[in-house]
Image (cartoon, rainbow, N blue to C red):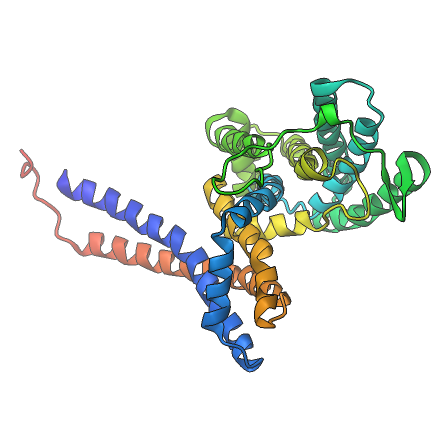
Length: 374
């Protein structure tokens, strides 16, 4: 009995620290590469990283980090839904931007008052994102088109449609800024005074992000749909043998991913800018891919990754005080994305070797004679 427990807990311990090792290796490697770049530019790495840390721990910056992380986290969840089924939804960027344009136009028209308008905007964003992602799903199951190619092309199409809608239907010119009509004050999502020592409020969509993270874990790990999704991602042939309709799962997963993607722009739309214009954040979808990889599609891991990205983005301006270009942060983020893939592969190989050694030791160990346990 004791040997059985030792094997079980030993396996859990091994898997636990290996799961943490990969992202840590990636971050450490990114720090080393960034330090080398700073040294080549004649700057002191220790001073640069100390400045980043000091600035990032200020109350106001902490609130900004949380606000930036919310959109990143929701985008990562959208990407992770596809990843869990071995689908690469590269179109999150186009899905959330088109959803934001349509939702902003509807919200600015003030069809409904107050909270009802908020609900209408959020539902509209989810529906638009889901429908746009469904196109890639249908193309995959009907014509065999790779979702990578179709979603990348749909990103460009979504950008064009969004610009056309703003220019011809939803847009109003305010000075030199062309954007949708502002959403009325009674439909703004209030901020939360979460960080002591600053008047900067945390975006109220933090609550939605937490709920989405919990829902993501529950659906994928505690429901039949989640089991079918993960089973299809592991092996389509095994899923078919189990009676799972792979085509339906592909479309359903893309729809779910697109619906969550549509929410990525809502913290900005309903909690900060209250309209869609040229200043609306771009690139959330591609950042979400990096965060999903860094967090290994785990809701807690992706939350940590989103906070890391938010910290780097929000603290980068402090580097200019040292006459260091803030683009050094972009270098660090890029290295993290590249190194995390390498780190996971190294950890995966180590895990395989460790498992083989464990099995070899068990096979080589002398077996207990029958009746010894009695």
